[in-house]
Amino acid sequence: MGSVGAKDIPELLDANGKRIDGRDLNELRPLKIEAGVLQRATGSAFVEWGENKVMAAVYGPREVHPRHMQENTKAVVQCRYNMASFSVDERKRPGLDRRSQEISKVIGEALESVLFVEEYPRTSIGIYIEVLQANAGTRCAGLVAASVALADAGIPMSDLVPAVAVGKVAGKLALDLRKEEDNYGEADVPMALVPKSGRLVLLQMEGHMTRDELKTAIDMGVQGCHKIYEIQKEALRKRYSIAHDGGDAQ
Amino acid sequence: MSNEVSTEILATHVLDLAKSGKRLDGRALDEMRHLHITPGYVTSADGSALVELGDTKVLAGIKLEPGTPFPDTPNAGVLTTNAEIVPIASPEYEPGPPSIQSVELSRVVDRAIRAAEAIDLKGLCVTPGEKCWTCFVDLHILDDSGNLTDAALIAAMAALRNAKLPAERFELGETKPLDVRHFPIETTFVRIGDAIVVDPSSAEEGTCQGRLTIATDEEGNVVAMQKAKVGAFSPQDVAELVERAFVHGNKVRAALGQLG
Image 1 (cartoon, each protein chain N blue to C red):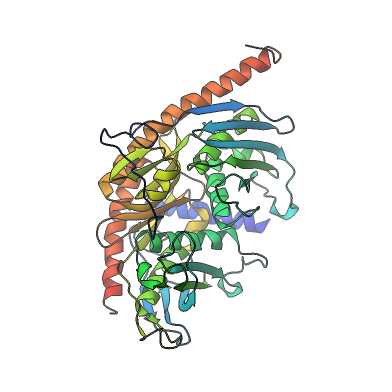
Image 2: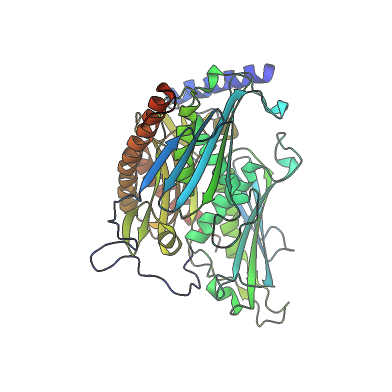
């Protein structure tokens, strides 16, 4: 938690229960998703979510590199979540730190949970997430983008995967934390939902919550995910209508 | 490849057993393996503990050294957790940079210690902004027979409770026990078909459809969680597993508490 030795803790909730950016506790930041933003990738998506800007590309199914990672019964899902050095206040050293490695692992596993990997033995499905601008919730933004990019690539999967974090700020549960709330809040629970099954494929937590708070937090997150799901579907509908009209719709 | 065939046979077998409420090693679905803790196993460390959870063996060693606080936390000491899965732990070991498994393991254990505020980091500050104690929690995985996470955090907590702040060695006052304030314990579950089992063996981890680790503290808080592996849990599953994690965590806390 960022509270150890912190200098000035900002007021996270005002007298009217509004958050630092004027949102209600269960209100998402503005979310825009665009599918098919990159030329060379099999599928791609761009997510602008509050002050987050995240781009995802999908390649494959294609040959596995390195070869020894190939599996005879299913496609290998290779996921890489990476932050640009300039995406955060203090320059981040380029390349995958341990945090990025862990996030790559849990996002890859979350998405593999909805992919029909058995259909593509001896191949690789590559999911690449680049965080260009970060303001808390980048793993969720990355997952949301990657999920749309997989659909854009036409890779069969059982459902899209929306994701969002619920946290605790000034003692209250709040949906979709922004940076100050994440840094000075008391807990953070990122999650990803498979709407059709109602099950969670990503779930992490850090901080302090009672079991009842945690239950409520997951309910809030699930509801938030359903809203994000609609925006994901809309992005794909838009992509298909443009593709269908030869690219000059609107 | 025979390996794939045997893996599939094992997976089917584990799944069939789980359907009738059974497990490969004869345990009940909610039964953890025998836990044995040896505090002070390594005298060269400032604190240590060997944990044996069934056949899984994890040795935790604590080293405390003077260092510099991080610029954003000038009034606090530094906690660093590292897990090393060494070649003797399993035949799957591959040389090279730390595997993603060991990175995840150390981060999930670190998260529980940090979020529970298990050690008083502010108390490890010597001169604000200049000098503090750095607490290294190093986890040496000796035998990977499943559920490294739970074993590693138990080892870390037992070692921290066993640790002495070596102030005399660095002429920083009197050597005294490390101030351990909270007691997080992680409980890991895996899904096998429709069943969810606690404290998975390596065979169960290898064939599961999702893994969930829940860290609880002694005050009734959930302090950390990590869902891993391909698979999913419903919100109802999670609520149920949180209850099971408290029951299990309190048992382990009681066992560890008896060690003093």
